Length: 316
Image (cartoon, rainbow, N blue to C red):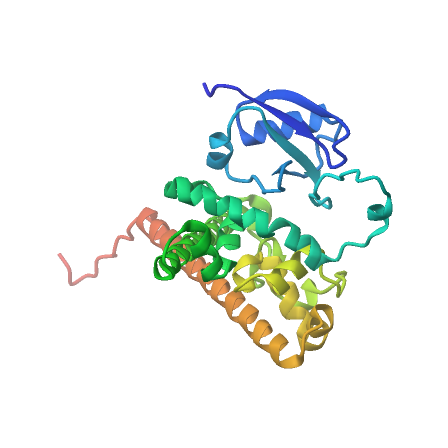
């Protein structure tokens, strides 16, 4: 049986924090909701209270030290730094733009702290989140070399390694999504209620590919997280879910350009990249579907009893 880990939880307001003991990340979500008085059915996410690092990997959670403080957030809530009282209230009236908020997470002090972790122990790469890895990749080679005390050629190799780790994690995430989609489709087809239903529409993340059905009831405005990924991340098409990719493609060039405040040429390149990524994922799903159909057909053929041929008068 897994030992219980002591930790602290709070909500977005940080007004109160509670100490609990949990055995897993899912246990933390369950007990955190109960302790903070949240509805047991509401979807929540877990982040580190200190810097907002998203905690969604069980192995990463288990490696965190005891008494780590976590923040439990609703689906529409976003982490923000703790408010500091500096003798005035002008800060309360300031408006924080999305780009400014994003820079808070990946600011100078943040990447310098991560660089010091690498300097002390290079194997700490495996403990870093995708946001932390991306932060180190985006830092200029000269500044990172100065912080680490290495030559720029060695730092370039290090950043290439970090990018490969990022790419590998993204491929693993996509593979898990495709496998989950495959299992859901298999379960749906095996149920009695779905055998007679039409299977003409492909399904991605529970959403039909037919663009007329996807756009029905959806707003042309993107959520803040999607805009942040599109505007601030390298290869954003690989970091979006299938549903977000479909939404971007359906919005079209004009609406996407207006939402991002980009010129038509730059928006066109992004839109094309999203279309290619979505098509690639669709091809993977269709390949898995074909493989499953072939396997199912072979099993049915093997279980079918062999037909006995009728003897003719000329056969003995």
